[in-house]
Image 1 (cartoon, rainbow, N blue to C red):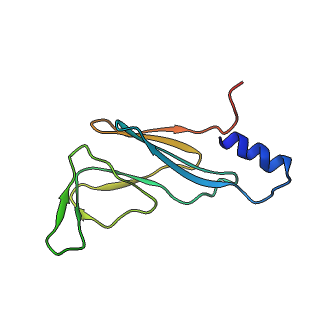
Image 2 (cartoon, rainbow, N blue to C red):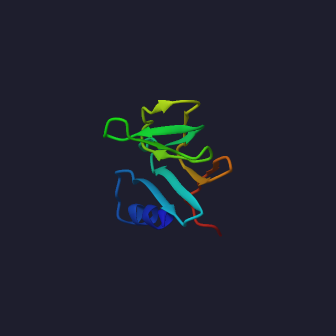
Length: 113
């Protein structure tokens, strides 16, 4: 898809960069892509470590499983335990699955030959 968009930009003389952060899930994993033509896309972070979310209602908390992950555009301020945020690099594809470490791969927008 990104290769088609980049080709269309070139074919039509579009100089503004294509910018996109995409996310999809299949019930087993969460997949996300951070990309922009000029390598200056908005940020994307995934969590590592155990965390607890606080709801807007006083005293309401959601305890995430120890192997749970959150994917966000900016780090959230949570009730920290060993929660850390890891930036997903520009032009990267990340896969998050329960029970495993996040897998971050370089993304190449050119179509395979």
